[in-house]
Amino acid sequence: MLRKSSVQILIIVVGLTAACSDQGSPTAETGPTSPGPNTVDTTTTTTEPKVEVPTGILAVVPTQNREDPSKNQFQVQMINQTRDRFDVIGVQFVWDGFTTSPTTRDSIIVGGQTIDFPVPFPGAACVGDGTIDTMPDAATAIVKLTLEDGTVREVPVFDVWHLARKLYLDDCEKQMIDALVTIEWSDLHEEDFDGRPVTAGSLRLTRRRSTETIRITAVSNTIPHEFDAVNGLLNGSIIELPAGESTTEAPIRILESRCDPHALAEVKQPYKFIAQVDIGDGVLRSYIIYPPREMWIPMRLTADAACVATGQVVFVGDESSGT
Image 1: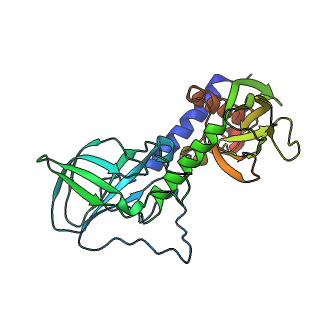
Image 2: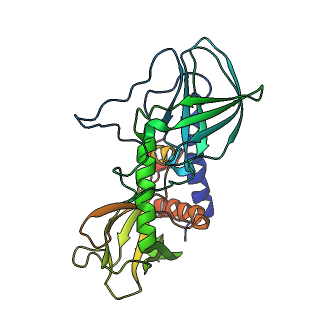
Image 3: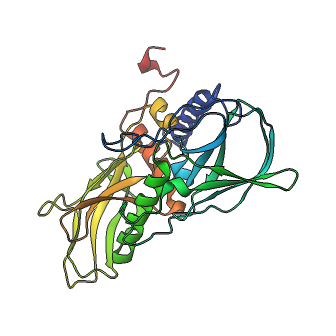
């Protein structure tokens, strides 16, 4: 049995490392931010024109930082290339692809300043088949900036990093998959495996509108968690829902993955498991399966305890470490 103090020490070490890593990081309102989001593929094709922000205007560029996806939000990056000052009390991203709820602010944007305003991602308002061919033109997006004097300024949006497009397309694809099948974790609980605690349960598929055979061929790991298909692969699939069947489950385990405090302190999305799903057309699509939120802390504590049980953690002051 693991000593309670050992697990507590691990948690403290990880917490202290996280606190140290945050020191010195600029907040969203202390000055210019990096030119592009960390979570978005900024590659464009050779035939696609580059989106550029005109000079001399107040403009918006949608961005995302590392922590935004787990918070289901993005950043409205205000770029003030004018000499004007704007006393902002409200921000709203408005587009036919998705429109955020108004967000209250108490900020000042002066000439030459770049400032990020976080706003919640509301989900896409999918048009047509939800693909890029029927997507609303991102160039029509605006941000409504409510000023202290009660006036509302409409600021043009320039999707330089194609983030608005990515958020729209990814969510429309998710909505399409959700309409066909429910993909979820089932009966997650702690149990013993090879002398250490692990999270065990099932991966479950429940048919909705789909009439095709649905398969999941892979599930990614996260930094603190490693996915383990108990039964391995069957015909290249972790789990398969044959046409004509309404539901199926496959046993799984979530093992500990990285145990070093630096990696654990830096992780921003420890519960983002990405499945590769074939909805019956032979195309693999990425689909995020989050565990139920009430399991997040228990899963992390189980992984921490497993790191201690398997000897993958060396504590400060441990005689075996030579300190």
